[in-house]
Image (cartoon, rainbow, N blue to C red):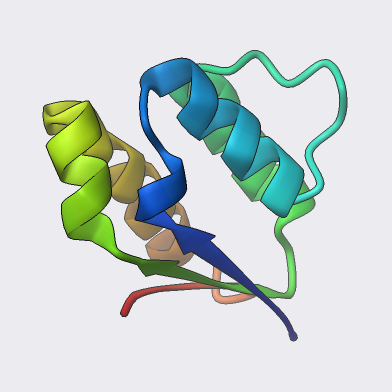
Length: 89
């Protein structure tokens, strides 16, 4: 299982957060940069990946409730698919 770490400090606004996540998780160019597209891409392109999210407090400071929505997407998909792991660190 390949590990990827997302750093909340790099998520300064929604657009930057989506670009950063897409780069770190190797999403395709056509990634839609919204929560629905995130759910689709995580489900499709993160099989056998262990995704860690560090410095959530920084993301939350910059993004507010949107940071929590991002985490919910990762958590929900990891709960549905045993080949995708997600953890807050």
